[in-house]
Image (cartoon, rainbow, N blue to C red):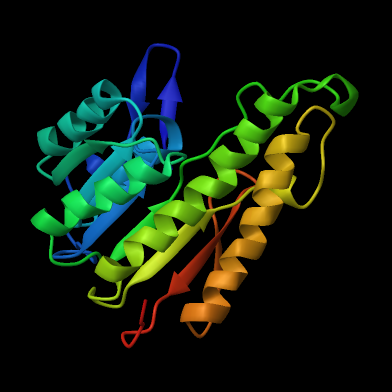
Length: 221
């Protein structure tokens, strides 16, 4: 849990100091959307649990801040800027990773958002609507597809997707975000059907729900 106040920055008890018991020591975790918000907190938490964290998002300066916070607390992290809605950038990102890492153990597909999805359907701009769906669905598809060669080499490898209650219960002014998250939920199940034995749901402090996918060691791509 993250505590904040109007008088200062967020206080993260799990980072001061790093966890004495580090259950993810020696693991390599990739977090998308790690430049700010929940993605940054996920990266910090994975590092506190002992993982070496690969942080990716679109904005290098934000990623650099995430990495700086992790290393200042004694953790290990690196950053790669990548627009996960861009197929070419995503492919090149994993080509680069393969030259520096021999595996991935955890992939947290957190990238997404609802920025700009505030108008009723009749007033929505199609291009903006589609962009939000892509931010929440296509990013997960591209990252999941292209991470599999490295992930299948990992120790008890997992893909985790970030869902939302709005993917189950619609809200006026959030149709694109809700549709993206609803489709992401089905995509998570499709991944599970293709590559693993089960989907294990987990929750965070918001109404969101994630799907955790254990990938079989005999995965083929």
